[in-house]
Image (cartoon, rainbow, N blue to C red; front, side):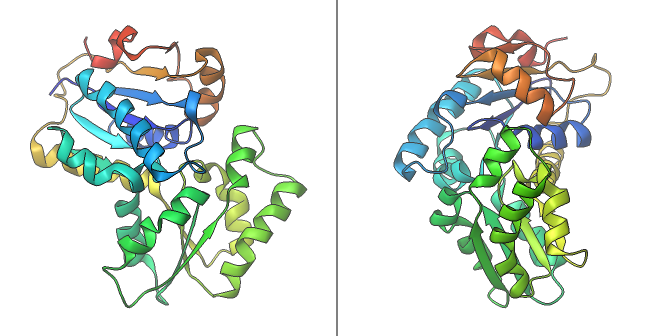
Length: 273
């Protein structure tokens, strides 16, 4: 099926999901929409997050995508059930895939989750882990991690001090598996792994979500046929296209070329040859 994979995020973090999708499904086109004008979603009331997220998902569906990926933990917590009832295309989010992987990976039944304040307050991960009552799950909000990533800081003494403040309580609880419950956090894998220790398995919601996208499209027979020309990708933002392009290339790489301020201006996003 020659239609793009629609990926939505409140800003830039979802580009780690886009990167994982491109790596695992290199023949697929993607249409990415970042709501950077209203980011971050994390501190917002859940009703406001729901409104903004559905507006953006509506735009992607109108653009002709074949699957929706809610690449934002806060938005996933706010709108997943609404999205699955609202749209005819399948919807994949970032919370449940990571929870399933963590439940399989843990050896001592102690799992940690780090996320934004909004995701932490929503208890979305704790609710998802309720299906595995034998697990002890500890959730921590790590709001400053997003600031560091978007400033291009992935190391140094200040970040290490903040990481210890956030993560030492999880180390003290002897968790052996940690869910990176924000799509910015894979870019901080080095410092997070350093503080947590080599014995702790890090679960990336981005990687697990990409696997879910592949499974969903394969089950539906909707993977893009191999004989078609190389895929084309469209990137749009509700904010400043030039600023988005600068940060997006850091998150995703050279696939981010032109960035549009209006999704409808991005013909490449529909996967046309």
